[in-house]
Amino acid sequence: MTSDPLMNTYKRQAIDFVRGTGATLFDADGKEYIDLLAGIAVCSVGHANPAVAQAVADQARELVHVSNIFGTLPMRRLAEKLRSTTGGWGRVFFCNSGAEANECAIKLARKAGSGKRYKVLASLGGFHGRTLATLAATGQPEKWKGFEPLPVGFSHLPFNDLRAFEEALDGETAAILVEPIQGERGVIPATLPFLKGLRALADRFGIPLIFDEVQTGIGRTGSWWAFQHLGVKPDIFTSAKALANGLPIGACIADEPYGSVFTPGDHGSTFGGGPVVCAAALAVLDYIEHEGLLAKTVERGRYLEEKLRQLSGVELVRGVGLMRAAELTKPVAFEVVSKLLQEGVVLNATSDSVLRFVPPLVISESQIDQAIGKLGAVLNKCST
Image (cartoon, rainbow, N blue to C red):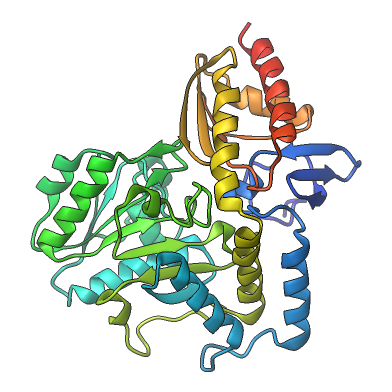
């Protein structure tokens, strides 16, 4: 037996956070941190958001669980609210995570393929989850080791290489699955010609185009969904992470005919769409609307980009809204993250030369200034 009761699945920092407010976190010793990670693009409306906390408390006093054999008002209201964010289309399946939402999307595509179409074309470098099917869809072979054989039918093509996708399509292809911006790879945006080309290929072959918006959705890029500012509509897209500001919820949203593919018994989730998490998600969406966070995300994202470009040691800045990456001139990203944590800034590295910035959408310009000031000082030390 080991002394740690938790399984060894994360390389955790030696810090326990005990409290948060907005874009600020506090550890057990009372030390204050500016959060540029937001639980990996999750706590978008801020830690301990009062509106979300109130919605959770109110709903927990009314009804927590009845199973999906019955409906509840929070679930129906959230489904309608999500439909309103798309402009009026989509049927929703609720689950508990992004991986589950992507599982649902894959199952929809295969069910629509009537057993004849089962292959899914995905991207190298993409990330879609840790379940066996979503791990198979993830284009990072290093994550497959120890879990083979994975489910069959997944092909991985170079991201932004339309010709490669076209050449891989055949009569057994059930769907195309990509992220509009590859988050775990280091905030790599898809090009508009690539996404438009995939849309045309999906139409030509009569298969769904699926966008994984688990990290890019819920206002992260300055629109409700990344596909909206790109002007390329998917048939199916998935959401999770920021949807309930830290509570476990995922959603798969599908336009017709795919939204009507499932029949009772085809899919399910015991806790999916529970009243408490749906009440939280409704509060998140309402807060984003009422506080004008979509427009503010565009403004703060540009401000963050400008500040990053001014730093010595930063070679390239990419991304949209408050989903940004800084590519460094030297492979010191993990060292930078460690030293910044000591200075009271929470940040993340996706590789030895890339820093990822996905702060709460409520972060202020003053907080950005403070954090970037500390980042600049740490970069100078790490680059000498």
